Length: 458
Image (cartoon, rainbow, N blue to C red):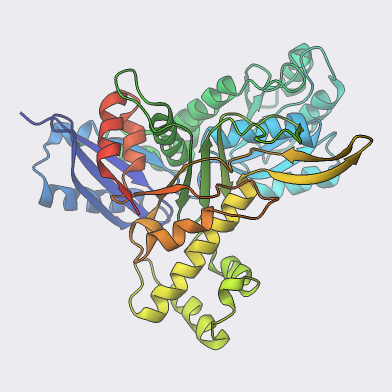
């Protein structure tokens, strides 16, 4: 007898639905309909479920137990505040991104009045307050706590800084009406990261409060509910694919590029340590599992930014400017795969540029440095040049007429850019990574085997 499981993703552009048969470990159907988050989110959900029901005999029990993830309504907007940009502020940013948030602002040192106004204009869902190693600087985090406590623009605060400052931070928020949560320091010792406790707090806050604020709680009348941000589900799938499950081997270190309508996200599961003897790592060592999100590189909401990048790219050299501008204008009006050679070629180029730009921002860089013993190189960020596996995901890749051309933007032979040199390219051809990540929470081995079955070499 089949065991069917239903998974939903509320995206900024589309609401997607996936049904797996866990007995045969197979995909039965995948559907998508335009998202309706700006009006009534359950409208798009009901349409997706209706399409599923026309293809697969799912019952009320399967629908009621369906689980969802969401990046709708702009996702989970976070501001990170730390002490030093290269250390505690960066640690907070890494923690937020790893939990599936969209970091809309970062601040370091003591906030000024002007910076507080800038923060208020960002209207974050959560402020992550960090600063100081345990037993170190307390002044900065206390100062920033006092300012944040007094602004009505912030409702949810996670404090993950110097534990010695906890009493003073708590006193600063007393009577403010803010939802303040404490967790372990993101950088308890200089250069040492502890991100998991912060990740867990962010996800809990997403489920308990943020989904209510965005109106997503109404979906609980139909399905089991939204259990995590979509990027966290995709991140879980990437880590599962790289590291494997107890009874199923993974693929090893990898890079995943997820191109969407609003953002292009990059995930790496790799140590990223220097691969050359003449290279020294500078700054905070990044976590093995890292996510970055580029909010200006979406293929629907950020076409103007991508068009500007294209104009400076070698890919544009043989392109007619007037035709290009017209194609970009036409792509603005579409929520589906473009038709016609001109539009298709234009979107392919923009998608490749999104991949290339996002990966170059994610990976590390080499900078020459002269010393008394001769020239060496400083590495900032992760060295992913030796990675042999790059995975592509998202609609602009899954439905592309030439996904290899698009995903090949992730590779580079530039000596200072530490991107993969000559990797194997794999595609989430059925657009199911989010569902695999959701299933991995309860059935990791089955989730991994399903994912392997539907990955396609390109």
